[in-house]
Amino acid sequence: MANIGHKEWKACYQAAIRVLEKGTQIADEVRFVVTHESMNAGSARDYIDGFIHLYRGESYTRTMSFNGTIYFLDKIVERYGQECEYRACHAVLEHIEYYRNLEKGGFQRKLLNEINNRLAELSLKERTLQTLSQYHKNLEESVAKALKDEKSIRKGRLIAAPKLPSEKTVTAKVFIRNPDVIAEVLEHAAGKCEYCKSSAPFNRKSNGTPFLEVHHRLPLAEGGEDTVENAIALCPNCHREAHYGTEWKKFRP
Image (cartoon, rainbow, N blue to C red; front, top):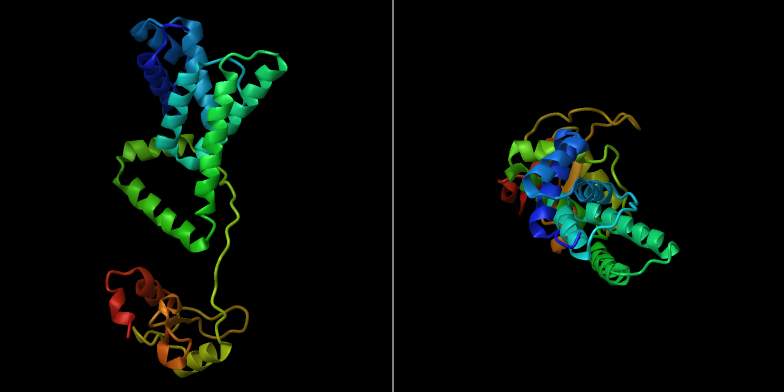
């Protein structure tokens, strides 16, 4: 593996992406890399298979060079994000533990330090995502970025993506709202949206009352008062527009 460098890592990375996102066979990709990069078949398979294991967060036993492993980790976070990088780092830790049990050292100590540093950095980033509002903000930014990608790239990521979502615990800061304000505003609205004047789209199954949402004209987070004068009853559509629409200012005082 002494002659394997950036050109070969890139070829194996691209081959692994084709396996993950286009469903090609590893054996075919190994032959392709051997033909075009003059790698031996064993090394090509080790690197292609190694990247796939990293992506899936699975332990692996065949060795890759320190620099090759870091190259793959960088590509994983670049293409699939921090959640996938987190899984990949733990796959490397399991790989290191496997070699530790075999009493083999070499680059493993250096790799362990690098992985611990990455996980510490991910943990720091994780602490900045502990609020629900920050999570929704980041999700909205990620969706906007995904929409700018070519459809083929997005489809490839969908094919490779886990079918079940990961879980994360976040904290949510909430304002303790006055229920009398909500009741007063809803009663005044009498089942009709106070902006579009349409009837509530449905009734609540809990008590049969018209479903309207009470929105603060000047948000509480911006110093708005929790008062009847600062509140308005909106249908769900107008409420979403008040928060996310291009004309959101028309709902403000």
